[in-house]
Length: 332
Image (cartoon, rainbow, N blue to C red; front, side, top):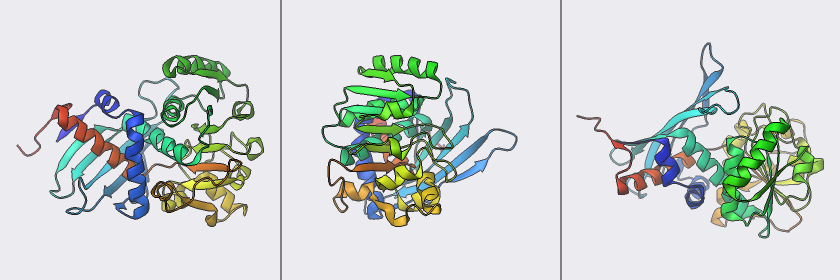
């Protein structure tokens, strides 16, 4: 088994290289070539934290090259902004489906951050207008930075506007992101101001209640909703859901945990049929994408284990090829 640390994960799977990996993974999800029980959370007694448990399989042993199964374990703890540990710490354990032996243990926080932003980039490539150049990001944490780089991988981004609750922190983030991503980044005073005239919008917050409203959206925009992953929280309001052509990564997960959609359904604003398609169906050409330049499209990202397994497999293969990481023999 190969142990792959964070620095190697980051080097071997940059976000641009991860986008085609996510394309194949999401096609496999929509084709039914995966097994992925709905994510479970276990509270940590006495701590402001919980462990997320995400098992799954990708492909079929003996029929699919590189068929694999495994599990992601992620500890989500409330930490102050800027804490070097971040909010997610964990690992992905990868197994060979034919032999049933472990292949790798991969650092999980960077892997998750990379595959999440790459999945948003895939959705953006499939749904956003081809001439999109103005990106708006709501939030100023790690995923905000990741999503700027991810959007640059699929569109010629020339301008970024961002908004965060803390104006001073947002301004500092804008300066840092501008240097890191070599693009003009401006901090806006309000979320409404940030998304004005934007082509692509990414919400990457930990907000429990909406921070962006349907009334603030303009024809032709594409949204990636990334920050909320439980049914009781939402980053946008009912009107934003109602106004958009709504796409998801995996229908069962969306109907279990997509807070924006579930709250809109509960309020009677939309029904389950409001889901146009899974993004893997669009990637496979079996479901429609944007049908006009005036439509508002929306991709709700929850994250599924197939994404972790596909990213982990790509990293493991690259690590094997160059002998990166640490090889351990569990059977000796």
